[in-house]
Length: 216
Image 1: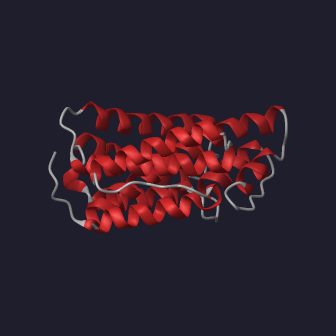
Image 2: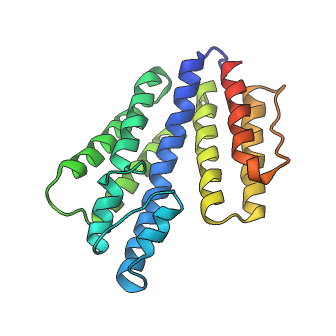
């Protein structure tokens, strides 16, 4: 496993992992909420986006999909994929060619949805999730694990933890993810260790540790 990696590339791989994981987890929540709006609670979408600190207004389930994917808010998935694409370009030489192509394809797909005059439907959610699965599948198939790959995995884990804190907050799940994050940190720098003493400031502690990891 090679050790030479610039801080810029390490940061880009970390954020690529975070953005892709954020898009995937958000899409899954959008899909579940879409069904809930139709069958159970018309305000379920508003409740979902409250967890992202976003006030989302919509008229029906179809409009919810539209506002969630391309609405004027910080959780806009098309804009999140712009960020993912930019980080992928910076890290291009450290990403499998097929996985890179699939990242670009996902970016272009979400951009096309944001420019499409036809209503977004549930099939679009499925298509986007399929593309993300292909990205992870392609990336996971390669035999030799690069040093940079661990930053990508670290980003995924940190984003997963953030989602768990927003949605579930089950202590056993949180402990497992933190354990996995610590394992990634030790692989990247055996002298570093994540210590989380205060759950309230958990994410801030993790961010500071990762900042030191990337700089070093």
